[in-house]
Image 1 (cartoon, rainbow, N blue to C red):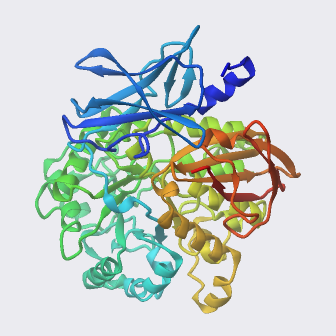
Image 2 (image 1 turned 135 degrees about the vertical axis):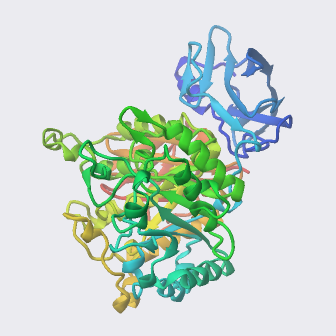
Image 3 (image 1 turned 30 degrees about the horizontal axis):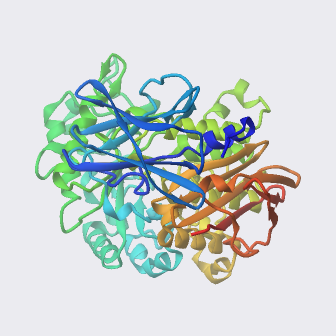
Length: 586
């Protein structure tokens, strides 16, 4: 077959590899283990040879790939190498007759790229992927607002969580503290008695694990509250202002910041056998991980920058205690430095998901709106902006880290999207469904699945009590059905839990993303347009032909047809979304 110029873009767009099990024989190989790496592209592409370029002991090495097979219109190439170092960084080189193409996580170029967007494999010696995250669905609970202001209330509602499809619970702080939010900790070593105390949490952890669910606890080791005994008894544990007063986090005097130059403090928080972070990881509490509040500022104080040192010690202590514990950092911006496999497992993915999708739906960016000048700018995010933001986040990460990203768009710190009058139910549903389309783990904020009431002007409006009084009516709503379906697909379909991701279309305010394994392909289409549009999707690039049936996964009918060039033409209604199971020729 002669490849004409008009076909070249399809050939280049079809080039694909990643760090999922469809393209590597192991996501976290052991040191010195032999591994196979794959790449695929359209059949009959004009390539003469394909190489993997990697670094071995500081020197470049090119490994020629061999054609392995053809399936669904795609050719697969494979080569074997070994995990001779804890971190393997590589890209692909495709030799054609008159040009050489270089393929990294950032895409295809005709120039030699730097190594900032390389594919990355981490050895099991430096990264232990928690097995339970495959297919996981998080559910965030604000304890004082969920059921009876008690952890026993959470135990009572475990059957409800299972019905929804939740596999892991993320609890906001539960340690002794005077406020409802409990970020002003008075005692890290005990659960607040108003929530039921230590025994209640022990019972909750036991009940969740017996029901096949995991539990993540929230903690701030950056600061305490003023009622903590350390404020009086160990004042040297805190940073001081010039006048001798305790320095408060973000200017809040009630949240004094801990000074980790003190070795005794490090011992109490994470180094000692009975330290805070170790205690709750062990029986009888046996938590499955930590979410760290304000992780972006931890260990940072003007000319004293200890973040890297402290995070290495903290993460090392946690993994020494429980090697597959999940470590999640709260960070609203670019936190790539923490996400290379040696520190956090994942961020709360505001930067790579939540902020993107909220702005794409028409809301102001959460940080830009804090500046009056920037807030007044009327620019609306386009689909191309979304793609650029996705690439900025994901193309610098190891696959195993990207897979663990906590994808949320509502939380205790940000207004619920469905409570905003600018967002209709279709746009809310589009954001919710996109949790399946982005790499990472969906996180449901308690009550979102019931369309919980609230307001957007203050954080008290994000933390309403769970509406159990009319639960049956609310469970019949589209909110509950949507999240129940999302949880089911995430748990049951490997494409969403372990599969690859490829953007097939991004024009105007419409974006189409495929999630796939070799044996199954799903296509999500998100439109934030006001009007209906007709789009042509190159589904052949992911080995698909057309949708199965005439209803999407949520029972929505659609209209489309196959085109001769391998694309699928689809009519998309303004402001709506579709999730299609695609047919392949397998």
